[in-house]
Image 1 (cartoon, rainbow, N blue to C red):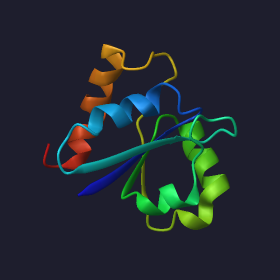
Image 2 (cartoon, rainbow, N blue to C red):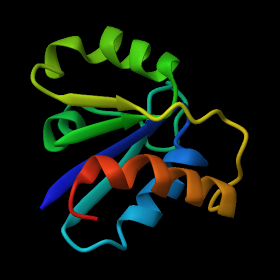
Image 3 (tube, rainbow, N blue to C red):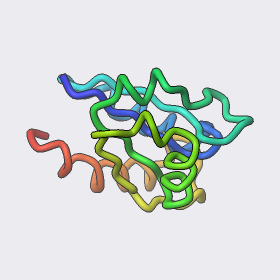
Length: 109
């Protein structure tokens, strides 16, 4: 069972879409969080420790992640998906982009 954590700024559109999408796949446990202070679900140390792979939507999220949680990231695989904040929740173009970028990184899907 792979544990995937998707992180964006406010955990409002992109990362919840990824959570909903990939939670449908067998063999995956999926969560999402936001790196910003006013996120719907703020990122926590526990979520980072739980995850096998952390996917961030933009490089700015990776930078904030490194600054705020550096000591909890030791040995964690962090992947930047380079998906800008220009999509609505579950927008078909976002779903297709997430599948195209994430599935090849998971191996068996």
